[in-house]
Every structure is written in C-alpha cells, then in structure tokens.
Length: 196
Image (cartoon, rainbow, N blue to C red; front, side):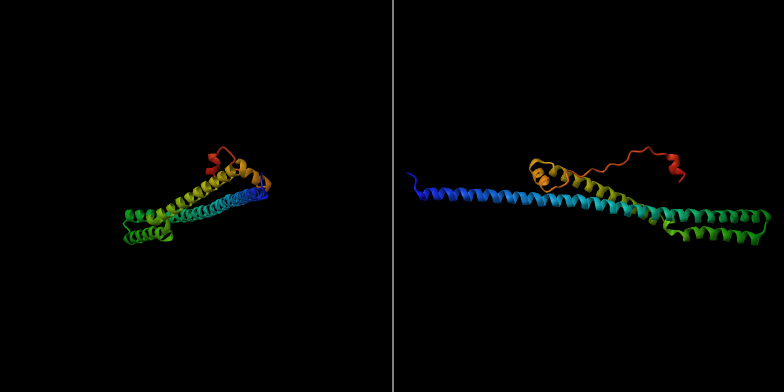
C-alpha cells in the first residue's frame, strides 16, 4: 500500500526534476542565443575591419603614387636642365672657355644636388626601404583582416546551421548564413592598365 507521503515525495521529485530540466533547457537556449549574437557581431566586426583596412591601404597606395609621380615629373625637368648644363660644360671644354667650363660644371652639380634635396624620401635608400616596408605592412594588414573576416564568417555559418543552434537561430530569425567574399572574375587588360 502506497501512502500519501510517498506519493507526495514522488510528485515533488518529478516536479523538481521537470523544473531542473526546464531551467537547463532555458540556460542552454540563452547561452546559444548569446553565442549566436556574439558570433554574428564578430562577422560584422571583421567585415568592418576589412573595409577600414582596405580604405586605409588604398589611401597609402594613392599617397605613395602621388609622391612618385611628383618625383618623376620634377626629376624629368631637373635631368633635362642637367643634360643641358652638361652639354654646355663639354662645349666650353672643347672651346677652351675656362669660365664657361666652371660655370657649367657648377650648374650641373647644382642640378644633381637639387634632385637629392627635392625628394630625399625617394633618393634616400633608407626612406625608400621604409616606404616599401610600410606598403608591405599595409598589404599584410589587409590580408590578415580579410582572413579574419572569412574565418568569423565560417564560424558563424557552421554554428548557425548546426541542428540545435539552428533551432534557436530559426526561432529568433538569425540570418541562415553570411556570404563569403566573392570577387568578379575578369581578365586583366595589361595594355589598358599600362596606359592609365
């Protein structure tokens, strides 16, 4: 014969077990939901970091090209003048004109110094190497941020599409997946690039 006391203990035990099971499910649900939010945020952060790095790298490259462009146009002008002065020097030497020879030699030397002084960041080997190192660093930053973004995208897509996490994701309308970066595949027209 079963007493009321035993029945009451059994009911309380079942109630406590069900309550613990519900709390465990709610805890798991909450942890899964928070994990999906954090993973989604990391994907968006990776995308933003990649875009920021891309913009910064583009600005660095543009600045580098502007410096080289300015240098080349200035260099061209200075070298024309230096060539003219060198021709004048050789003409003065052939004619035996001592004062013309000295003047031409000095003018030629001034032109050579002007090249070095006008753009020391290009002429200086150290600064040229430093500029190239900064360019490499920018490219590495870009590559690292891109790889991080793709890694975070893969983590999100894997989690979101797993069975149990998918239940929580579907209920809360998380995106089924974030697309991986895809570029348009185009054939390079080298002559067009070189003529820009």
